[in-house]
Image (cartoon, rainbow, N blue to C red; front, side, top):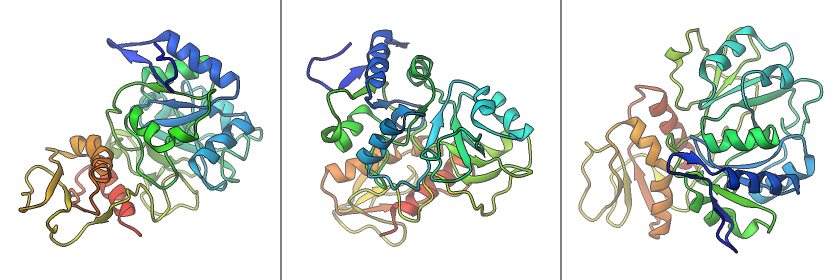
Length: 319
């Protein structure tokens, strides 16, 4: 349903997609609008992927550098052949096994793939999101370019209210935010470079490498990927990864880490899965509370999500 005068449309309730909300969003997109789209990872700001003017609005709203590639969100694994060229067989196997899901595959781009999507590279990142609202929107309008729905370099949104808080004043009457609830994963997708003989990790996310059923390289790659800048995912508060929290600061850590006197506990997750799910919300809560400093205790790198958390917080701490 749509609340008159409100940019947010409830698109997921009682365990089902609101078809009218998705229809509205699709109509807005066909008229040149952009849509705040829920996924299982974070909210994306979606535009029809082959429409340059619409994708340019996404870049402008975010303040995103033009040489920073975006991920194209697609309906299923068959899109690899439409958007890719000489796609390795292992990439197709990964898509068939793990899509829909929090996995982006970077493949050699087909000749007709617009380079405004790729940051000028000859590769394109593709993902099939595991959120019913996102899939319904893609089914209605086709593939969408959808970087996170926030200002570039800042904390990614995991709730529709986060999208409005970040970019609501930059949205026009033709734009809409689909409220699909809280994002259950809470951090961005795993990105694999699939241009070589074996996949290579470009960004850690929720996908366990042991689940891929093949050897994965974790060394450096020449491919530029979203989220790869040294400073990223940053709240207004300064993030500290070492030392002891001072009174009045915020603390983000697993539940077995005690809270010093006078320190504001932002979250107490019990494991990396819970940590990832509350990470960005906790950083936003610190800003909302007016905290100037956040101490974050990094989880041990025992799995993919703990590595993802370490990656995001390490970049958030760079000033």
